Every structure is written in C-alpha cells, then in structure tokens.
Image (tube, rainbow, N blue to C red; front, side):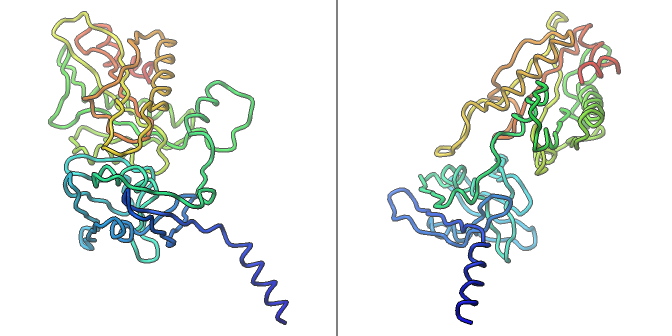
Amino acid sequence: MRIFVSIIFLLLLCALPAQAVVELALEGDQPQRLEEVYLRDGVAFLAVDDVLDLLGSRGDWDSVAHLYRFRTPRGTAVISPGSRFIKLGERFIPLANKPRFIDGRLRVPEDFIARHLSGLLDQKIYYRNLNPSATQKEEGSALDRFFSFLLRKKKPLDAPVLRAVAIDPGHGGQDPGSIGINGVKEKSVTLAVAQSLQKQIKMQLGIPIYLSRDDDYGLTLEERLKAAAHPDVDALLLLHAQAAEVYKPQGIYLYVRRAESLPGENVNNDDKDSRRLAENLASALRDSGLTVHGVSEAPLLPLGQGDLPTVLIEMGYLTNPADQMLLNESEGQKQLA
C-alpha cells in the first residue's frame, strides 16, 4: 500500500508544471524570493502588493473605480485588471500583458516589473526569474510570420499569420484636422480610408480589425488607444493627412516612434518590427504607383511607447490636387488601402 501511494505521489509530481520562482530587490539589497507566482499562457504573474511591499512601496485598490493606484516620484501610477496600459498623469504606457485578478488578488505580469517598475520608482531593481523555461514564449514575432506569408515561403505556418490589426483614423468630431482644397477635411479622409482598409483586410485575411472610431466623433487619448488594447492586436496603424500653404508638396510619409524610455526601462531601442512594418508598407505603396518619401522617426507624433509594431502614415497633402483626388475619391481610397 505504501509503495502504491508513493507511485501515485510521484506521478502527480511529474504531471505538475514547473513552478516559477522569482528573485526581486532594490539594487544593493539582498534579493528576496517570491514563490507565489502564477503562470497564465506562459506569462508569470505576481501579486502587485507583494512586489511593491518588497520594494518599500505600497498601493491601494479602489473597489468602486476598479483601479489600483500607487505613488511614484513621477506622480500617481494607475493600473487596472483587463487594461494593457499604465496611466501616469496624462501618459499611457503600454503593457505586453494585462494585470489580472487571480485567486482574489490583483497580479501584474512579469514585464511590468522587469521593464517598467524601475523607471516608475526611479530606482534600479534586480529581477530574476529562476525558472525561465516555465515562461518561454513561441519563437518569432507575429510580424515574422506575417512577412513570411507575404514572401510566400513554402514552409507551413503553425501559428496565425496575423491575429488582429488596430487602425486609428486621425482627428474627428470638433477636430477636423487639416483642411484642403474645396474644404476637404482630414477627419473625413482618414475615416474613409480606415473603413476601406478594414473591409479589404477582413476579406483577404479574415482577421478582426479594430477602429478607434467608426464615425465622426472626437476621442480622448485613452479612448483612441482602446483599439490597440485588444489582446490579439499585433500591429497598429495611425492614419493622417497633411496640408501646406502651397500646392506643390505631395506624397506619403511614414513614421515610426523614436526610441524613448523612462530611466531604467528596458525597451527595444531599434523598434525593429515597427520599422520593418513601415518599410514593407512603403514598398507596397510604391508598387501601387504612389509617391512615398520613406520612413522617418517621429519624436513628437502620437505614436506612444511599447513593443506593439506601430506606424503613422501621412497619406498625402490635401492641398495638392493629385493627392486630394486620391484621398477624397473612393477609388483612390481603395488604392491606398
């Protein structure tokens, strides 16, 4: 009987997944272990109260607003379950994974600690996952699979080519954006192209497309970012159009975010996926006979921060007759899309 029980116990141990354990401390302090680590979809989650307490800080859960707030040298930071953003004043910092309530406690994903917390607290943090194999992710980004698909590689794709795309048509409501020939408004043009692009992607790829707005109304920054907050979104396109004092300027410009981070925050300085996406877009637009001026970094444009591949597209000049015709007529909008 004792042997039988021992075999059952051994089988149960073998069936359990490897337990994730992390070490955490302020730089210079003795690292402390946190063993209450939950794995969800290959991501490690830790109780935010435990993390902040170990680092000499604390936060408060607002059960009415469903928000968690904690003080930082940069102001009050706010997170909430189901949101992929850290709100810091008027700034929204994207998270790769959303905080979750697990076993009655709010838990934050590993990337919140490893990439963002040091910058928020203005202190260097030592963080180490002692069992990284338990949280290994699938190799290759979604864009790697997407570009492989575009290049028609013969190797079959085990994962979805692209799960979803978010599109932000610029301006809206009381904000018309640029105004061009015959009073054509940027807000109308961006929405029309976004809806045409939404339809074509759905038809050709059969994936969800999330628009930040689907009619003529204004949006706050937080509302504008909601489209990109869906967990299946693999790319974000921001659509805009320009105007000039003279009619000669013409053509399309593409922008990617400039690498910026909070002190101590670990970001991909090259933002390679955004640039690769922009370069592929530029190539496709040129192949369609359109004038493209290349890909640039945009330090002042509303591209946000984070790893989500993001490209801002200035689709042309509403003050140029050729561009205005392209942007304002349905056939031109389809060509752009």
